[in-house]
Image (tube, rainbow, N blue to C red; front, side, top):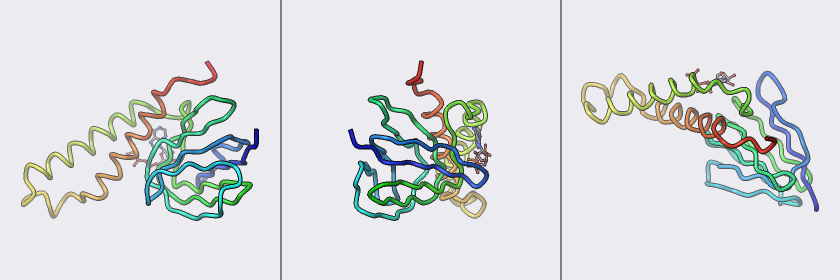
Length: 144
Ligand code: ATP
């Protein structure tokens, strides 16, 4: 079966590099599936759990945001942060999730007093990053 190269790079390291069968990513325009020989594409990425299909198994990588470049032979993800399940601190992600939820809740309850203090967009992105990490960390390990 044809494969396509995938490289996921974060500011401090190469997080993942392999030949894969398919990638499912959440771009700023919505979810897209990338197969070998995909047409060239450059897109922004939302915070999400990226799904990598390789050898009939699915594995997840948490991506905090960034950009993705696709050519027919290679996918390059330039992530603001990215983690494999083993590198995720679940307690930290859970705390980040609760913090973001609390901020959004406060904003919903008291928009007049909290509106100038809480940045809704920032809290929403933090919530999505935390959800991506929790989903990635809790996914079944395909190697097990
Ligand atoms: P927090 O509020 O916990 O810092 P965050 O979403 O603001 O979370 P980021 O700005 O996305 O964090 O990431 C900053 C750095 O911390 C990156 O290097 C990222 O890989 C790492 N990081 C963030 N959360 C976790 C986590 N739960 N487990 C492991 N590494 C994490």
